[in-house]
Structure formats: C-alpha cells, structure tokens
Length: 589
Image 1: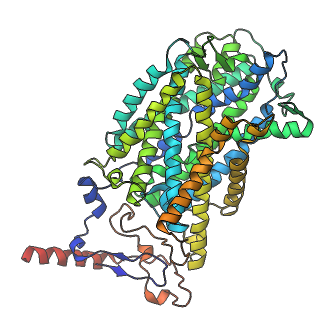
Image 2 (image 1 turned 180 degrees about the vertical axis):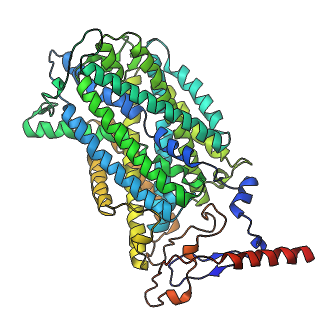
C-alpha cells in the first residue's frame, strides 16, 4: 500500500502494513470489537446535537432569575429601583459574548475540519500546545459537564414546582436522571435521534415564545396593555450595590456580562461529537456554520424580546415559596410575559415546554462528559477502563461514572436549594469560560504550526474570514471574565463562600497543569513537529487518509520543511491494482 514520509516534521507518517492491504476500515473493525467510537452520527444529528445541547437553562430560565434577584431584595427594603444592568446592558452583553462564542466555535471548526480527532478538545491542546494543557483541558471540561448535569436536572424540578411548590426536587432529579442514563447506554444513533427531535421541539417552542412576547409587548392579550420600549427608558442603570454614577453603571454591566457566559455555556458542545460523525471533513464545517447562525440568532432575538416584554422588576421572575426555602420556582421570563398579560393557559403550556430544554441539556451533559472521559483515557490521561466501548461503540463505563454526579442534585433538595443552585451555576460558568480559553490556546498552537510548516490557509477544508484576529479578542475577553468573575465577593466585605465558588475552577485548572507537568515532565510542542493530519487512529472516516497528505518529495523543501498542498490525488487504478494483487495472493495461499 502507500507509505509517505513528507519531510521535516510536517505531517505524521501514514502507513498501512500488509495486514491491512485489503483496504478494510481498521477503525470500523475496532468498533465492532468494542474498542472504539463509531462514526455513525449523521449530519442531521450533528447539527441538532449542537443546538440542543447549548440552548437550555441559562437562556430560558437563567436570564429571568438574574433580572429578578435584585428587585426582590430591594423591594423588601422599600425601594423599587432596579439595580442590575438593565435591558440595554443585557442585550449588549449577549451580543458581545455571542461574538466571543462565535469566535471559539469557528476556531474549533478550523482545527476539527483540518485534523478530525476522537479525543476531543484535550486532544488538540495536547497535539498543538503541551500535554499538560491537554490534561487540564480534558479534566476541566469533564468537571464542567458533571456539574451542569445535576444543575439541569434540578432545573427540571424547579419548573414543575410552578404547579406544585411543595414537591421535592429530588423526585425529578431521580426520575429524569435514570431515564437519561439508560438513553445514553444505547447506540449513539439513538442519542442523536433523541437530540434531533428534542432540538426541533426547542426551535418551535422558542419561536412560539418569542411571538407571544412580541404580541404582549404590542398590546396583545386580554388586558391590551401596550409596553413597547417602556422598559428601555432606563436601559443602562447607574447604581449597583451602593455604587453610583459611572462606576455603578460599569459594575452593573459587568455583572450581566459574567452572568451571560452561563447562558452561552455549552455552545461549543458540537465539538464533543466530532469523533462520531460521518465524513468529518465534509460535515464538520457545515455543522459549525449552522451552529453559529442558529445560536446567535435565537439567543439575540430571544433576549431582545425579553427586554421589550418583561418588567425587570417583576417579582414573578424568581419566587421562593414557603418559609423553609423549599418550593423554589424558576419561572421563565417568557412565562412571566404572558402571565402578566392576562393570557390563560398559555403560561402553563410554555412552562411545560421548558422541560424539553432542561432534559435535552441534561442529556447532552451525560454524553459530553462521557466522551470527554473516553478521550482522556485514549490519551493515557485517565484510567484505561474508560477508553473501552461495548459492541455498539458506547463507552459505557465512562457513561456510568459521569452519571454518578447526578447525586449532587440531591443537595438542592435541602433547605438552601436556591443558594446551592446558584453555587452550581457559578462553578460551571468558570469551567465553561476556561474551556473557551483552552480551545483558543490550542487554536493558536494550531495556527503557529501551520505558519511554521508553511501551510497556507486557503487550502484548509474550512476557514473563517476573521480568524485568527477574532480569536485573539475572544481570548482576551475570556481571560478578563475568569479573573474578575468573582469581584462581588470583594465588594462590601470579603465573602469566602463566593470566592470559592467563583475561583475553585481556576485553582483546579492550575493544579491539573502543574500536576501533569511535574509528574510527566512534559514539554511544549515544537510547531515544526506538530502533526497537521488526522492520526492513524482517527483517519477521515472513509478508510484511507486524504489525498492531500500524500506529498511527493520533490514538492517538499528539505531546508524549510514546508509542505505544498496542491490537490494531489491518489491514483485510483493503482490502488485497485494493489488491492486485487493482495486478494489474489491471499487466495493462492
């Protein structure tokens, strides 16, 4: 078969020995033996996984809770001033963080289309930066989703408490948790199909909610109360926790900015399924483009509708029923809009629809956490047992271990349910932004390797017009958010609990880097030696390595090690001849 050695460290050696001369897909055979993931997610499933896993609690419920928390506190003290960022700040922050997330997704898309990997984000950090960063990235991402899992399951109980405030959240954590674990133990196509239909249900529900919000703002409903842009009269509030003027306005805006990051957490989840998608070089770019468009359009439009249809000082956005703190009800701002407009039955229908969002997000949490643990194991950064799969290609040991963190949801059944839920949100937000930073660091390592080895961007399977410059801006914003996400714990006296919840993710991240760096004595990857091709394990999902990587020696500069991608194709007739000769030889023997 084909053996190529393209020159000074440019591309991995791609070899197929005589035992593989029949052209059989080694990865497919391994999957049948329970030794690897299977590329059996269709483009349809991939697109909806990207959407279903990212649009959830943070947007549909979290936005309203952030808007309502301060008014409730201030109303109890006799003041009616709204001291958060206001509708203007909310929309600006969603636009800004939306651009950051779009930059992260497109950066990931460039790497994934060029170098499809089954080891997830950690694999790119290991390949292009330093194995210690890959170790930290993988465990950071795993922790993020095992914390988001009980958070979303708890949200399902909070939604049901809209009708029955006295019901215990633990009931729904158990019921939905068991169901989702069973679903994730089935073939990956079952998971993909479930997320596909849940995704379409989400789209229809969001469209219905936005239409209802616009209608109520324009005077629809029994009360015929026209709102218009009334809530925009004070778009940017200039008071926050006792600070006034420009400083108060900035602190209020920054609070909303940090909170917005949680709403976008999971937007990059599409990358977790790249290892199981068919024809990754063709389908990954499509998924990246559609993901960015869908998420940004839905997020920005939904937030705009919220700002014109919901009174930010409404006590309905977050209500705690009962003196013991149980019966906390997380109400979506869309439900508040139709409820305050006096529309009967529609609030109940919308609230029931919210269950689709949180269950879909929790389903994605288990899937992503288990695939991340699988990738860590395949990179020898987690116990080997988690890198095994059953005959269906499901890493069931990783699924079980990831699902064990569901028990954290029972903490929300205690007296301090609202506070524990907030802690989960704070911790997962920091883990999420750290993951954006890690993806961008890996991306810049990828860009550096391309430039050092002489690859031109125009030959990439997918490229974004504003990269790498938008990635630089996104990295800058991400670092700022990580460093100053817990500024509230320093305002008005030091709060140790707030400090821990906002920065425990940073401490864990630094510990992972130091631990792997010291124990394994890792070194930063030389950009000249960084592999820019799919590894032997990954392939392209089509059995043979792509033709672009088979580069004749006369097109390789021995002095610079640069590679010229000239669209060289493998000779099909030659390949068929080799295949026939191999089969004939075996038959004779």
